[in-house]
Image (cartoon, rainbow, N blue to C red; front, side, top):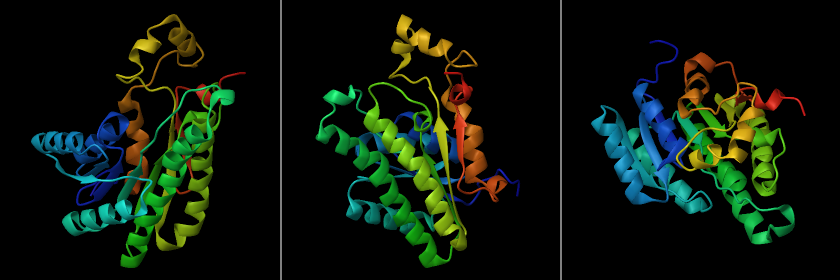
Amino acid sequence: MPQHSLDHKVAFVTGASSGLGLHFAKTLARAGARVALAARRKDRLHAAAREIGEAGGHAMSVALDVIDPESIDAAVARVADTMGPIDILVNNSGVATAKPALETTPEDWDGVLDTNLRGAFLVARAVARHLVDRGHPGSIINIASVTAFRTAGQLSAYAASKAGLAHLTSVLALEWARYGIRVNAIAPGYIETDINRSFFASPAGEAVIRRIPQRRLGKPEDLDGALMLLASDAGRYMTGTTITVDGGHVVSPL
């Protein structure tokens, strides 16, 4: 079997009802994985899973709230009962609040940190317990952000959550290596989506693009190489690593 093949693997993707999560699910399915798409929006999940199936993939949808431990445990159990032991977790669920720090309320802060950091930890822990109980190796891929390493105004809670997630990735990798569980992260830079396309077409958005060394936005497919490396046996000796995929943004001069 080629190192990048995911045939017979089971992948669990959170935040998979739209955006990058849905893109990751489709990419893994095309590589041969059976994919469980998890999120809160059940109607969109069902449609996404159906779309993957119509394209020749194998997918299921499962309701998940990453800030609710009982919901997480139920989702992991349902995926395992339906598809078999989970091999790959893409910990993608995330939210952002764009406000100046002086206007960020405790509720704003808690809402972002609860989903992006606490939620990511809870899902990773549940999947790791699932793997350890079965003596099964696995790959956990956390979706961080270039804001873990560079500053951006009005994103204090988001940047803090992603910086925490990058460091959490290293700690979990250290603890879980003995069980054959690899824990890595991808830190995307600015990726073009339906939500941000109009902003990046504006003068302010064009100014942001000019600060990226490659002078362009990323496309969702620009993340596929890092995703496949970390999900497959091609990355079997990698753990505790955060891969930036950002057009050189993180190394651009101040």
